[in-house]
Image (cartoon, rainbow, N blue to C red; front, side, top):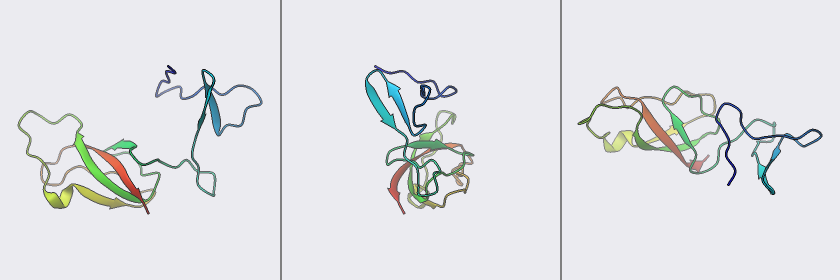
Length: 106
């Protein structure tokens, strides 16, 4: 199994296309848009305060560090549209940081 650390990222060998990295014998492809910017994939998760890389529809996927007993978000807060460059918001009703999962690219 290949292990990557968040701070180091994938290993890129000399003369290797930076859009590909090697994990054992399996290449890992980094998705980019037509301008060469990184793009998220369906199912990728992001925290409140991170910048959105891919315009799309994101679904609430849990609180980051909410105290026990924190109310669940309202139905209206569970799915949000975000445009590339916007910041992932907290849940308004609880003012808590959240995990957001990409469910549809727009």
